[in-house]
Image (tube, rainbow, N blue to C red; front, side, top):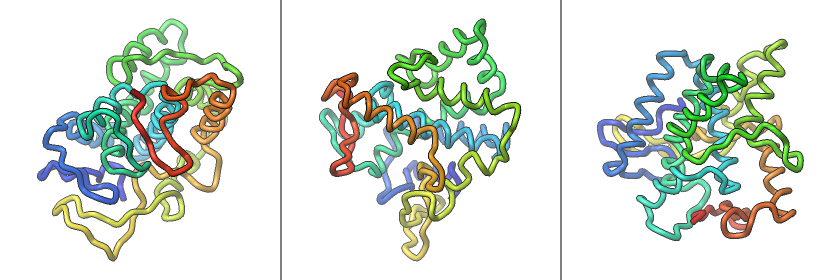
Length: 251
């Protein structure tokens, strides 16, 4: 499955996951899919797909720690109202992540924005763009706090370190789209919005299995911060309930 094939645009329906979701009242999600397709045309799939995967991991790590989830919360509130609680693979949660992931992928795919992020003079402009398009409360935090570094800063700094020895594109998470790389759901046909139970495909948010990703490393640190009381119960302790694989509102 291609990462952009998650919405049936003619019918305005989310088609990735266990059930379809009506997006008639969610223009931001529709617009995100159109932006996703523009990014692929602009930068090519070889650049956009890895950027999308990295953005997906970053946004999920933010959400799991209830750090930067303003717009995800707003979309889930539109879907469910206050006090929502859903499974990790609930299609409304996937649809709520999607615009934030695409907006961040736009910055990670752009050489201009990644260069500004790592430049002392240009970082302020980068942070302002993140706040404008991705997360209004974002703060750049490249310095470790109890050995934990905020995931967007960590990702960009790690990439900067490996620039002298570039890796093949396949090492940046191509396994995400392999059948063994993550969760699998029944296929949906985006064109007709009909289910095809004979075919299976990996979801766009699946995690790479063979190697430890930056996000999984970050999740370990999120657990460390929770155990040390650095994330308060309720507000950030945490949004993801690992005992029964559910996610709840940060509010």
